Image 1 (tube, rainbow, N blue to C red):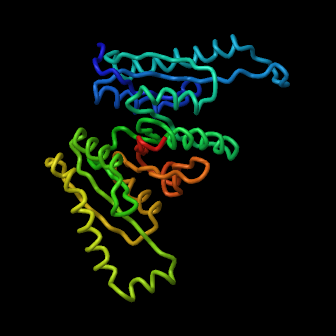
Image 2 (tube, one colour):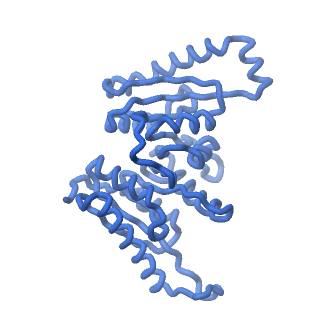
Length: 294
């Protein structure tokens, strides 16, 4: 059955049968939002001077890539019971660049986080972070151990400060509404011990939490007005943000984080908290884009 929404869900696939969790999530996402699914595989043209054994020609790499895509398309059709339009794309070039290019015409890009050796972890992390930092649509990272049958009926969004991130909240409220789930908005902050002692010498932790929660609730009024049926839970924790988000992700179906409004020198748009959450979260994580950051 063909869908009518123009922008597809894109899932990046590296090898045959290797990204089952990402593929399952992408199929569910496409069906949930009435979109088509695009399965993408990218390969590099190996310079002929490299001592690769056996040396692969571009044609052989294309053939291998096509095998990967055909297998993924069959798996997607099986997961969707054939009720989803699945297309494939074989791209030559950097995986990050090809996924970034696809993100310009996509609703969502889905990638999988798997357990790797140290060297593989560096490469895989560079792909995940590289795409999440610069994609023009939300990027969802799904852990290999994700269980789609474990449903908590909760969406979680992390907010760095009371100056709320518009794109992250747009995505979080939309997902909570679509999933018929509650939304937990979490702001966590902690200072080094000596500074924490100074802060709470002037005010109590309970007072700080109560006043901060009130500020956040007021700033969320534009969203609560648009999504009155989404149950909202605003939480303020004196804790390291990454630790708090990872811990609470075990009780959520979906976690939304933002990226920097003003990238650091060199174009780094992902902060340390977002990178840590992408590595460790217990549920799928969406990085919301900042659409005017280019």
